[in-house]
Image (cartoon, rainbow, N blue to C red; front, side, top):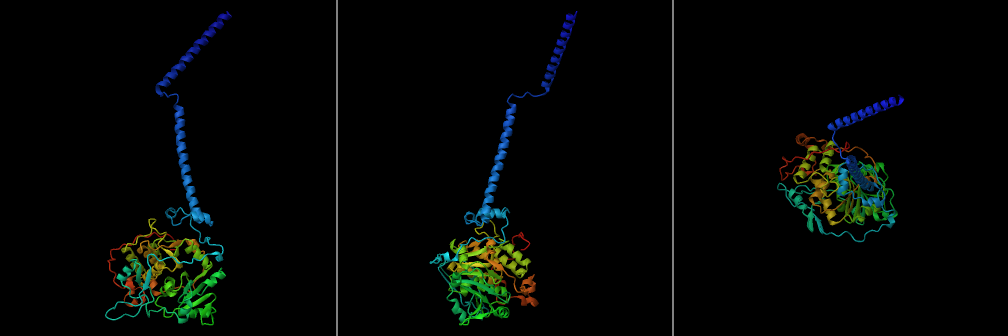
Length: 501
């Protein structure tokens, strides 16, 4: 009985198991009707595709990081004070300029180390001057050749340069004769005693004070060798000399020369212009005319205290790179149109006359600065100028001064224009602004400078009752009809790059 019962129970379990198995197969079949069939290697393909995508992404990120590291190293090398790394960087190269324009270059320090030689006594002074290859003989107009209104006009320091003469002066030849200030009886005359003294000066550090805005600041860190080699010449007008006598001790040598510390005072009698700023451009730009025996010169503005040995400066900025002219890059602006806008905002000269000058330059083809140009900037910091007085360097200074004489005294507006007109034949070195700030200590003016013409907002103010604001001996290009239609000239739009302007 028990065996039959067990057999019956076992058969029932088997039947139940068969039914369960059949049910599972039925369910699998039903699922199979609504789900796709995948090949056996499908999971491997998914893993391979995902791996390939990840590999591409990782490689792309690695490549971008590599480029970023290279660019950062390039930028760091430019900022480095180590001579080896700083030599790798070419701040005038397209790569650096493009990165700087895109805002990828860190803002430079206000001051940075200057890679100078350690000891001025070890510097080798070149025995041979840079040869004159483009302009070989440069002479100057000393008298006006034109008669105005049937009678000779009163002599002007800059002469009555015509627009045609101006145009001809930009055409380079082996032999050239140009206007370059110092017309006979035009003013800015030195005493015979000072003329005799400066004839012996072949290496010059020059500065200037006009209208009593500054007092001489004594240079520091000057080697004995440089004290013997250089003439330190402080040019000034009679107003400044009287002011200095009241505030600073002036010593007189046995020959009658006047000194304040290391500076030999050079008095310019009969200032050539009505505006002190324009008078200050005479020794600044025409250093080669004022001191004709000088082979090398370093100009610094009167408010500056030089803190680097001048021999180190010549070696760093001229001799090392075989340059004949060096000037610093402006801190904020690269386009003259940006600089003009800043001058108007800060009331540095009559606004309509600044616009008039910019329209002339635009009419004559001057483009806003871009990375396509061969210069790092069109706007310099003009308070420090380092020169070898070659014929071409002297010609550039003359042409630059002629723009200052004919138009506004804002020399930063005309520097890049003259470079443009010489079509790349005038080579110069524009060094970083942070090095420029490391050359000197800046002192404040004794008082704020101001003149009537700086506040003019419209040309109507220069007529009738406001005619007294017109300069009588400078800026004659504003009142001489320009041989072109400037009414249709549209100035380029300006993006203001800094609040300081």
